Length: 458
Image (cartoon, rainbow, N blue to C red):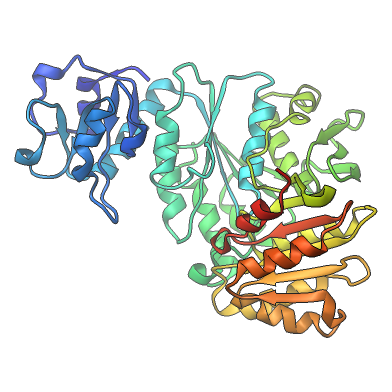
């Protein structure tokens, strides 16, 4: 980034006089004082703490200017501030200005599950032809998305923006800010159903990604999801592209081969070109198809994309194999969980061939509201005692699944814990043997990543 303070002031409608600092150069924007560097514009946000209280720390770390919504007489003397009504809105306004200035193609990605993996795959596909910038980690909300835009190098040709949400209206705001050329919905699951009431409500929330979709833009979505087929009828057919596992879709796979570290497939569009992805699971084939469809919309052929897709970099803690103690292997998928995602991972994990035991460590799936009991119970259909040797459950919501599994598993092979992870870790450590495979899957709020860390080989 290379903006003058005058340019920033105009973009956000600052009301105070900054004439003496107009030519001051801003090269990055930070709301965390610990990340401020020389040339930073500091954005003091109000949350549990008021960011204005940390202005001295921002200055010490190199900030050269700041947004300011507190009274001007509280601003540091002799330090340039831009007076705005709301510092968060100013951050979003500046991001929109910078996005329009750089003018890259914008790809927005949302979905109940798989959006981060799809984002990573899409980056790889688009690198076949373009200079690409993407959301880092889970910076996918009303603060993270504008920061992602403002971190974009000035030569970016395509920016990939992940859009997350908990409540209705949140993705609409992000879409209107980003104005995507291409919008992707990975799937409709059950995440946040506590706040949205039903899968139909979730579908409505995900469809908000079309709120800012350019008139000539495209929506890419799973064609086997009837809720989305119904809701996309308002768009022109030329704007729509579908992906999925069956032949009803514009892009679908043939000859899918799954393994522990790799999944391969061909597509109907390029049946002689093998695509491979360095991750487990047919559900990840669907994510890859979404990414390849984005590539096709931006004139990248399957043949061009395949070598890049094969080497995509997966964000940590998403279906990631790591070495465990005693020469075991851990499938770490402890960042996010909903019933659709958990069941899909269990189905694929159950079919893997290995010499040792298969151990499933499953934590509570959060934000399921009144449907929590039946959705946790439904996981039992995907836990086969002929294929899974031991099941370890963690959290109060998992109590109903524990009771259900006692009807189909020998009692000594099913274990349940509510608060004490140390006991869970101790018992896991005791039973893990060479060649065992351990799946850890849970919502992030249960912190089963601590279990992964404890049983991981160092």
